[in-house]
Length: 135
Image (tube, rainbow, N blue to C red):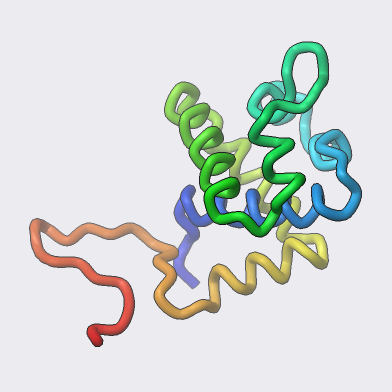
C-alpha cells in the first residue's frame, strides 16, 4: 500500500472528528487521546483561549455530514500545518491513533480502498493528470 498523503490523513481526521462530535458532542474527549505537544498544537484550531468551541467546531458538531463544514475544518488544519511544518508529525500521530479505533479504522479503510482516491504523490512532469473515469 502506498503511503497516505497529508491531505488524505487530514480528511480522515476530520471525518472521524465529525462522527465523534455528532455522538458525544465533546472536542475535549477527542483531544485527550494525544501527546501534550500534539494537543498544544491542535487545540487552538478548535477551541478559543477560554476553552469554548470556535465556530468551525460548532459548525461541524451541528452538521457533521456537511461537505462545506468538513472543508472548513480541513482548511483550518492545513493553514496551521503551513505555519508549523513540523506539525506533520502531529497529523501522523493523530491519524495513526484514530486508525486503531473501530470507527477510525472504518474511515481509513474507506480512504485507502476507495476508487479515485490518490494516496500517493502526484508528479506529472508537466503532463496531464486525471483521477477518475474518463467518461
